[in-house]
Image (tube, rainbow, N blue to C red; front, side, top):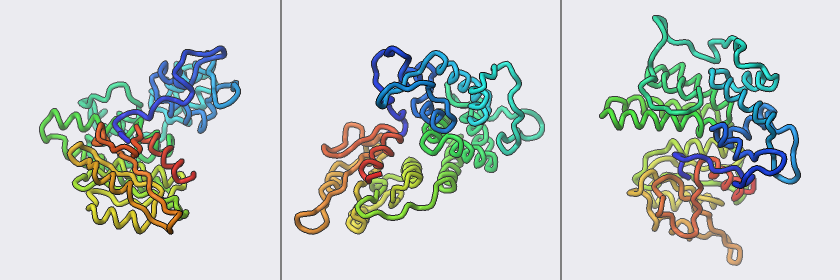
Length: 335
């Protein structure tokens, strides 16, 4: 899993529009949003196509796309998605005054005028929530940052919030301090800490064990970037997948012991850089066996993170993006 990339194309195909409308992937490209966002809007707010074709395929008509365009326009004004969806469904024109937002949903700038914090980050074309999160991080405003992160996770779900709100903001902060010396290191640490806390608060209780369905998540030795694994752990827990999370720089002996003691269906190994991605370690874990003779089992190893690019051993799985990693692990654990 390389969380610096998108979640992949929609399953409905890459071809041109068939009779009856566009595919979800085509609509996503037209609107400039991720396919996962459109599916979330459909599932959460009823903004799906008015007519369905047979099988898994969904086709979006001109009327359907216009409704999604209104949804994009309203969310760009800073409205929460639930309120924007209501206006989009009722065909409320964008020129109408949006509903008054309360302080609980939209923290106000400090007294003394509008804050310009966040204007120095090159965020690009991102969701409106990214700008609020960036401003709060640059101001080191803990209360506002916690509130914005939890609202994004509640409104969009863990996977979409990470992919479309949190990760773009983290990337922008990272670019900022890379080009400014050490000036913004404290902002990146501050944002990462609060993201980690928000993930823990938003995640449900640990899923109960199911024999042969556990997932072990750990950073390879020498790797301390745990945040991507934390969001993966939270997303799996949200879906009822038992997880054993071991965090950063787990020694080889400890990783082997953890795998033997838990007998997992899958082991996710995170490597942020090529210098920490160890092919021999991944191959060793993939070759581990347990159980009685004639019914021995092995774990499926997932090579997670950009460090595995071009280095993932044969036989391992390398998901691209958080959504793909979650789907793969749900399948491997029988969810």
